[in-house]
Length: 152
Image (tube, rainbow, N blue to C red; front, top):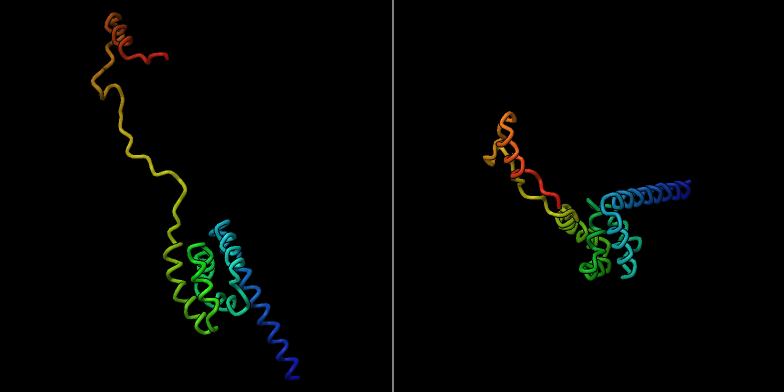
């Protein structure tokens, strides 16, 4: 009976772990999209992963940011270093890295162009070219000729 309980507990833990990893991946894809996918690929190519590494990731705050951060090409050496630590040290290092990754990735730079500066301008009245009274046809025609938009 004790052995059956132990197996049942292991299965519950495994299901909980799989659910947590699925949630992390879903959140990461929503937040980072292709950047996250590229990070995961980079980590896999570097041989970073394994059960202990993933369990440590599942236990820290903002794991999707840590994965994305560590998977950047400039951070791969750090990921390899952390992956080679003992499980306890790995957890400590990943927790420390969580705040750094959150700061760096929290303010993602937009690909949108910079905002346009203030738009200045005004009506022709503001420029001192007040339309004359239409009853004075000669004055109005001269004003119209001077202020009409030119065809190009």
